[in-house]
Image 1 (tube, rainbow, N blue to C red):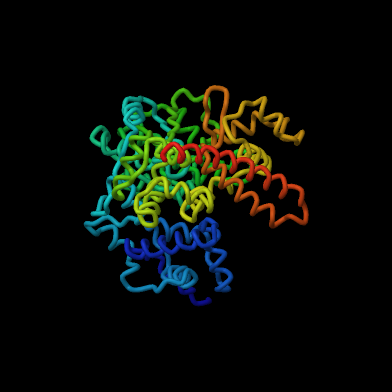
Image 2 (image 1 turned 135 degrees about the horizontal axis):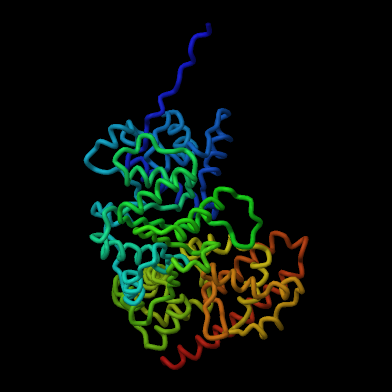
Length: 476
């Protein structure tokens, strides 16, 4: 009889310190490469450096910080991510679970009201109407939608703080790193159930057990960054993991229970358009007064009301964008709004931090969506369907125009005003730069498109500069 093979001990997890180091390195890599570092891509990196490789499921376990893995897998990931692994970065899973201080990721500590650990939170402005609507709703599935940086996570945090006493359990999970549905379901059930040692395996059984638990106890589940696990609306289907999430959300909306599932997402999930149990809140930009309060966090700023409105309209009242712009104005222009706007006329208006915020949404667009959004970016003002049909030259684009507009709206990329719509100025400028850069790479195949985009960008830029000149002229 052959001697038994030595089995690796799979009982190690990252400590909060180790998880923080890994996530910070992932974020730095995403900023440098402009590519989302999913568990699959990280596993591919390991495979290139180590012939034995590592499975994406193991990467998800390590990022989840709950399920134990073997020490060698942790060492491989840290090595390929160029992080020094220290003894304080990992520990036995049982010791972590018995620790009086919960082990959770940096991301959870920043966003989850249940994981406050001295991290300074960003001040919250406005959203009174949205918060009231959210708290007064009786829908069991509630969606907070909006583009990146608009304040979805901040509003969800306020909602949890205001209503946490109404629920027996509050569970907050981030889907930023696209965990598999079975893993996130087991993670939730482990938080809800005292005896979670023998959880079922299949998605159907896990979902059934979760529904049963939500029917027995009033729970609040928050799934943050849900767009990371949703299927792109007009791209070919085929990712079973994404489809599993969509089916799960449909079940959560249809089966009655006494709990609440709150989702934050940049995109509207498929299949939830007609469900009467779903509340949808589309977040828009802050008002001028609320935006000025955001700036006051950074210091003193100078400018007329017209200059303030011009700046806030350009960035769509997006609080995260405004915070980053405020830092730049305070640092390089001594708080002068008008001087910053003058600089915008001569230099790029979409600097690094804003590119990192917009790139994930634009990169998920299909070919037809990119074609339409380039036409929208060329329009200097609000445009109707009839006007857009005149601008769109392709018969294919004409045929699917309304469907494409619906898709862009569901991606939180369109502003509406009656029967007219537009891209926000910052989004339009980024689209022009992004698509131009993308087309230059393939100019040997489609050189004529470079000229079209270039003229579109120039025409729109001149229109914005004309408006800006009037604003600055009035200030003088």
